[in-house]
Image (cartoon, rainbow, N blue to C red; front, top):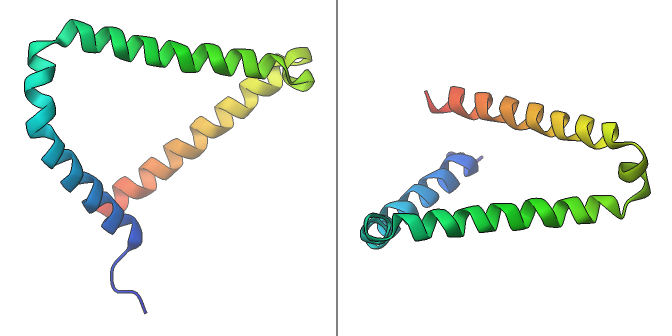
Length: 91
C-alpha cells in the first residue's frame, strides 16, 4: 500500500524546482520586466491565435461556436473542482 500520495510528491518536486530556479530568474525579472512582459504576451497570444485557427478547421466548432464555449466552460468547471479538492487535501 502506498504511504505517500503521488500528487503530493509531485507538488513537492515542483515546489523544489521552483525554489531552485528562483535564484536565477529573480534577478532577470527585476532587470528586464518590460521584455519579459512582452515575451509573455507574445506567447499567450500565439497560443490563442493558433487555437483559434485550429478550431476554425473543425466544422463542428466553425458552424456551432456555442459547442466550443460549452466545452470551455466544462473544462473550467472541472479544473475549479480539481483545485478545490487539492486545496482541501493540502489543509
